[in-house]
Length: 544
Image (tube, rainbow, N blue to C red; front, side):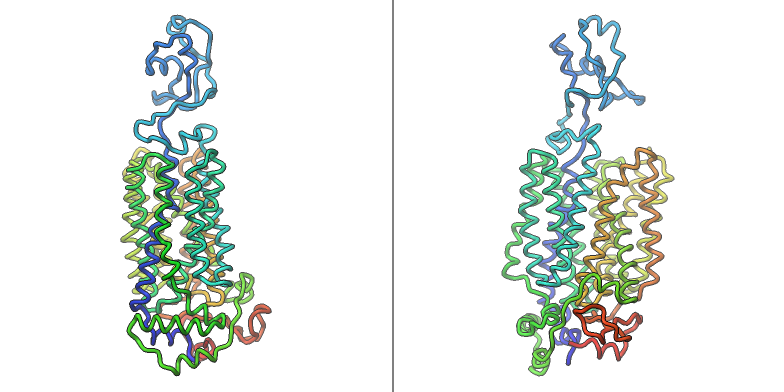
């Protein structure tokens, strides 16, 4: 019998076939950035104040400035209040100008918006200001809830029906619901459709990762995975330019969604995972794919190897419960989940708060996207030189420290805060790239989609909480950053309890030396070794 790692060496670990696959998935990752963070530019807030047109019934010749002076109070900084107005009276205009108004109340007849810079946003169309201001952050949390739901659905589904069909279905759903969100007439309908976009996006991200991990050999796996992540960073930069050019939220939502339709060619060219096909006993399909890959890579597969593939027995998939039956897998799962949670909390907390650091939102988004390119590329070399475990830990500790320092910086020093936020974004983006590589290597093939799906699920919990933590700023401005800083530091310390997987082939089965079955679906004699180095006995056990 020959294990898949040996087969891949004959096929080519990173030849033309794998490079073509990575090239296709790079396009998908590029467009994912638009769906993930497009709402940042859809909900840009603009200057506004209460609608006080009541005074025009008394004197229709008032200028806008005179109208505001007479009907809108000023705050302690001397600017007009955005959510308060003077209570209307039935006096004549001379009396109002002579004595002024003193009694104030909340806006009663809507708001007036300054649309000179931003033509139309979710905020202006659905009046998401004052007492409704928090709904934009809630909408972001609901989107992340959708990604959580998608992780629960598409993680196990990818293990059951395959990576390719789930990826194609997810792309179609993402396109349909993304376009639908551009035509809603109620904000709650927009929330629902964004939730479905999040569900589809989860299926795309999970299977994107797994396809790369299962087709590329261990020597190039990190490079391939992180290359896809670099394209996501380029997508973030393109999003900043797109948002700057299109100032109408409906047109921007269409512009963020339509490009996904260009990926229709995936139906003909996207391959299934041969490793997954083998675990399902679909040896003929796996053999055809491997022959195609070998041909594209200008390699030859011997008849002996292909004959051994035909002799393999089907291995049934496990489920998420199996991740907790084995002590080794349980430790990896719990720590991995916390690491993904910490990464997500800080990454999305900083990314979705891009407009609050004091600089222009488009410039800040461009910087945030640009800094991810060296971050992703740097992590590519870090995991190969220093290993997965140390790289993951250092990046988490650096990101957490940067956020904690921000809590001590005065709000007026916007440049200093932005610089530290960029450092935090750099570290968490790097850490995110590492954890995608690391997670795929920590779990065996028959549980990989479940394991990565569970980690992704906890990551989405962090994404759900991240926008809500921003709401705590009303109590003290340092609270959000204190939370964003402390959680990744804990995660960075927990990394040292995980094994190093640098240079090791992916494991395919989960075994147990005590002959205690993990579940009814798996054989008794299966075990996952927690050794840091591959063992001869283990290699013989994890054969196809």
